[in-house]
Length: 288
Image (cartoon, rainbow, N blue to C red; front, side, top):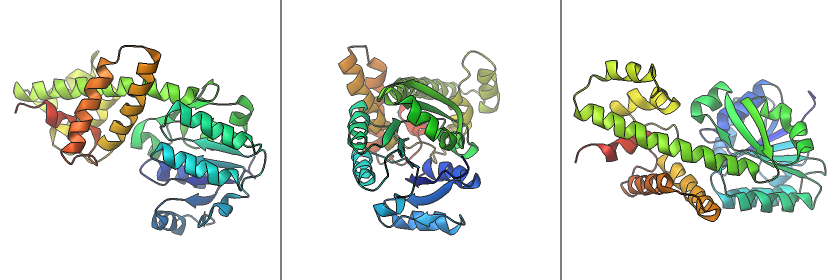
């Protein structure tokens, strides 16, 4: 399927490297971004890629992928794409949004014969840069197969989790685990600091045992140096946790971990650390 025409909307910390992988495979044709200058800068370094200055630029695309910040952004882009894409096209949403947003998007596009996949990702900026993301997909299997060559450009694993909304439901579970691990790692390392332990000995010792995890490995050393370059921003984690909390409440399950993490990231945002990496959480755990 070398002739597959692909568009990408949302060139942030995750989206830009994902789009870069598509360009490297010769599939990317059009890029769009709310801030047009980002799209222009990307296209300037990507031969053959057009900047979308209007929705019509995506009209010839077989697949358009989204990686935007908020539910309203997804719905706005889906509405615009529904008006220009041809029947049989596929819209793939890599954003983290509510299950209901995925279902509304799918309904809007289905009316025009366009498939929709809710396909949030996990793996952080490192995973996006390395093309090693885990993609959790909800939607029609036929649509997934049409879009698979796109996902394969930046995925280590593509999992079809079920019908529309199942991808976002899986991402909600993912974010509970991520938030809980962040809480534990930051509390543990703050304790290690307070006890005077040597970080250069502590971190490899922890990583060699049952406490090993991605967050400790990728963020342990930097947070102990008070380096909080994102990564994944505190403000984005807060947004995700609000979505997850609503899902957990509706499901009737316990959500103490979500509640604690949500309160902590809200505090960080209130302190002006919304653009800092989520590992800035350690600043709340240190002695005051």
